[in-house]
Length: 353
Ligand SMILES: Cc1cc2nc3c(=O)[nH]c(=O)nc-3n(C[C@H](O)[C@H](O)[C@H](O)COP(=O)(O)O)c2cc1C
Image (tube, rainbow, N blue to C red):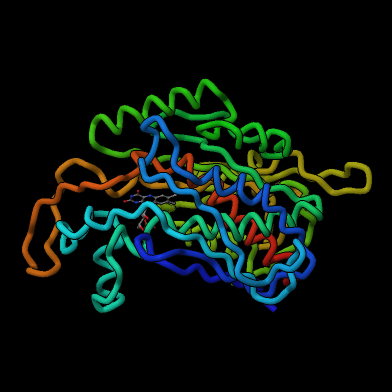
């Protein structure tokens, strides 16, 4: 049976959460680890992100007994604490450019909770981090680790992961940083870019790189259940992700076969490749090399500068100036979310194998 998760709630409702179905029983639910993952997604102080900072303490309603998963649906809920819905009533009919206000209103016939983006808020990624942390605990028992870093913000670039050998120890060092980068110097430059964007009343986008180590060979399928497809489905469930490439990705578009074919060789009794331009997946199936991909995250839609939009109630063009609390850059918080989406994808593929 396929691993499934359903995220529920709205940004300014009583709470948000997740129901995970078809989890294996017996996973140790290490709350210290789960809470440390939740903290990584929380808003950062010092103007780096939104000033809406919440406790994000998940309350487990079902599916865990004496510290381990039971195998029946696991429901976890996080109460919303710091809501200021008044910020939104003034502009409720003005669709924020690049946000889901317009599409959400049409899709749900105007019955959607628009406050703070409702179900489309980045806040809904907190339950995904919870679910991803449970998946990571299961994967860890199998020697599989998932880590990520901010590869780029604006035009500042971090060092990339070593495609053939990303180090799981490095994941912990990166995760402990305010801005999760490999190079501290790149991280400082990125912070300056974010501060500048905030002062310019705008926001800035970037790229997150994710790696999975310890991946066994032969997981995934060709066609629609390809490992790339499963990862894509979960990664695109993360709001603001607009691009995805595996390994060399779009770099293949200007390459020649002799430059980028991953040469194969034996290492003891194991088949390895000398390079990993394919990002650990061939034919939709893992080849035993680390899985590595990059996801492009767009600049936060809500910016303080005046923008042009439409009034959805009157059908007129209208200027919009957004108030409320918004990240000038989502990437430092989105890294752990993309790790979670990846952990859930790898777990799903392994359970289907
Ligand atoms: C962690 C996280 C935090 C976010 N915070 C905000 C925010 O404060 N303001 C905002 O306008 N969008 C924010 N977003 C992005 C929007 O939710 C997203 O752009 C919107 O739902 C439209 O979806 P799309 O960009 O995937 O098309 C956030 C996204 C993530 C992953």
